[in-house]
Length: 208
Image 1 (cartoon, rainbow, N blue to C red):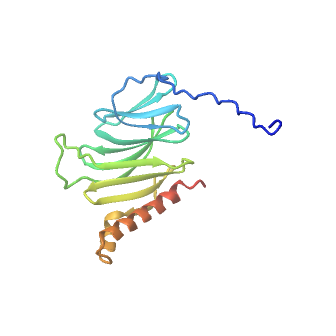
Image 2 (tube, one colour):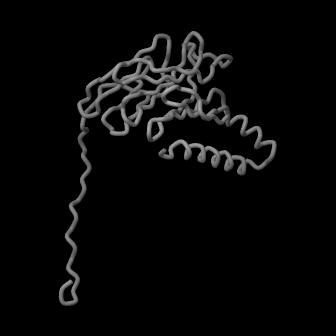
Image 3 (cartoon, one colour):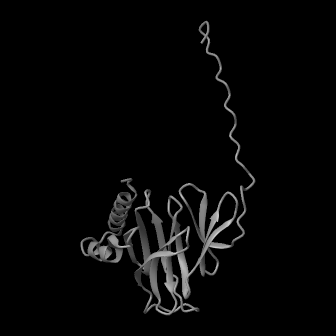
């Protein structure tokens, strides 16, 4: 400020979005998941018969993972890019399984069952498509999964990344039944479920 007058501030350079893609990955995918650095991306190609890990800077295919007799439903990349978690369904047994794989070697580190689609109406190719969500937490020590096998039937579980053991789980179907016996107000029921789920997710994502 000079002689009681304010000098105009220098205009900031206009931020422009890059319109051209950095790289194009030649893959038609059903699902994808980025690593924490954004340097790698895991994809499930259409058909769900394999996992693919790509370099997002070069477009190079780093690793391809196949498991005979399974169809991959969901995928999550670890924050550090060294592991990929996937939920698949085994065709003969119709079991739904969570596996963690090494990105470097392509080896499966462990596999755990999340339930079975036995007794559900069969799909045309004998593989039922459950609703599945999964993700690593911020320090890659845990994996959260949510599997819906039936309408209104969902279980949220937290697994140890090293062993695959379930550390905590919440059966929303049982929770709904309990709450319905205590209240007849649908709005109160829905609000309670949201609060409990948010609390569990907040505990998972809190950095340790």
